[in-house]
Image (cartoon, rainbow, N blue to C red; front, side, top):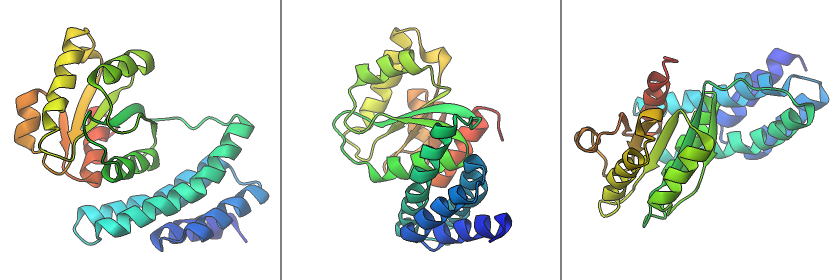
Length: 217
């Protein structure tokens, strides 16, 4: 199999939501001696970006986006191991710290955004769900991300997004990191009210906004 054909088949595997095939093709790419970074970016990630674009245009359902993200992750797990083994560097467009705020255990939306951010070239640090405000502050201080993503899927936990931004101000860290918020109840008005830098109304727009925030787009 030629390199271009393999990359195309990796892209198609993600678009077909085929985890097993994505994993098999990732292993084939390693056997062929392909650059694992190139296989990730021009194969798997390309497929996910296309599904994400379709979702953003209203041409794909959230279940399809979830399935595509899972397929990409299945192949990416193998390629990332090879990247680490080789000590290859994947130049990141920026570092993104993401988590779901305290009191909220929803993870699907956050996970999709995290996967799509990786596909867009971000180094993503996912600190999980139900994250205390002070933990966000500590992790911003520790990892020095370019962007902090705060997910809240319930109206009752939206206030925690505001709380985190205020805590960053008190810690003297707010001007060192861009903050983007997201989640089903979140609006552009809420983002302006609490002083967030951007809002992601869906996974695709979250990635677009993040790229804009770091000047990559």
